[in-house]
Length: 135
Image (cartoon, rainbow, N blue to C red; front, side):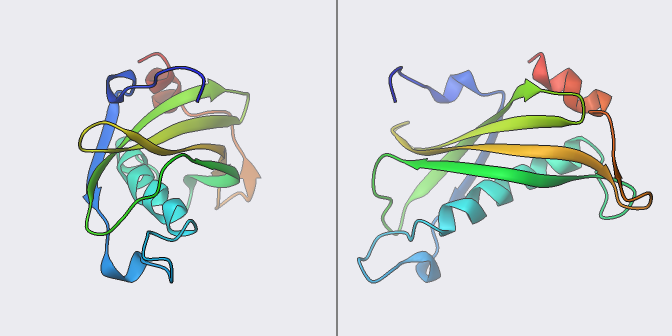
């Protein structure tokens, strides 16, 4: 967390809230649940990019999550997202979870691979994803 990251740094926002079931024995949101929050936010991008459960889609190849502050329940929060890297068939989604005061709670880099489930093969990065890299 060497530089100040702000919600305005992200073109895509997903607002949601914690759930009672997300609590762990320490009475804060369990670290594993953050991946579910980041996944929920990605669904909006899937819809934007016209991805389907068969044919043109993506698969997650890697997920790296950093935790900066505890997240307690109940809390409303916003996840900012952007395409932060393009490869030939892979790309990264940078996601940051902010509370409503825009304090950074956690961030993640998710590496995805464009994949055609009908052909069972990776594909070049789709144009709609490339377009979002330039935002």
